[in-house]
Every structure is written in structure tokens, then in C-alpha cells.
Length: 100
Image (cartoon, rainbow, N blue to C red; front, side):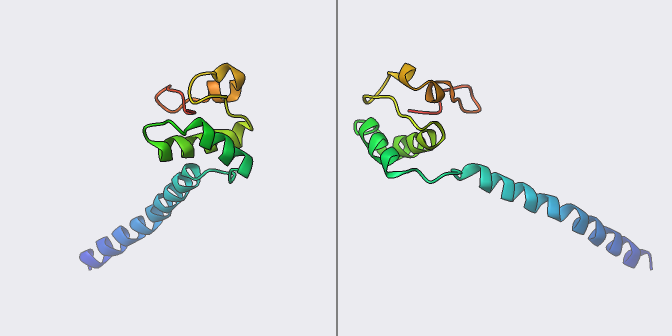
């Protein structure tokens, strides 16, 4: 009888805790995906911005995220971030610039 009670108690605790794990995973997945699909204008501007980047694909994807949020991309292949203050001020969790 004690083992049945302890088993039911354990199962009920797991059922109460399990939904919070699913909610965290869904929130992380939503945060990882860009909220807005970049327009063709962003694609063209980011293609030009990242054309000389060592890792083009990574530069292009970050640039498109920044462009969709800020609606601007600095000119040239590097620097000139003063032209787009939104991109200049956007930082990642480590305090580094998020936009290329």
C-alpha cells in the first residue's frame, strides 16, 4: 500500500512539473526564430554588406535579423554603424554588437 501511494505521489508531481518544461522549450524556440521574415530589400542590402565576410551565411542571417528590426543596414562591408543607430546599439547577451 505504501509503494502504491508513493508511486501515485511521484506521478502526480511529475505531471505538475512537466508542463513547465514544455513552456520553456516553446519560449526558447519562439525567441530563437526571427519575428519578421526579412524583405527582399533586406536581402539585397545584407547580401552587399556580407559579401566579403569570412562566414557569409552567419553574417547574412544576423544582418537580416537586424534589418528586419531596424529597417536599415549600414553601407559598406564593415563599419559605418553610425548610419544605423538601431543596429549600432543592438547587443547580444555578452554585450557585443549583434549586427554585422
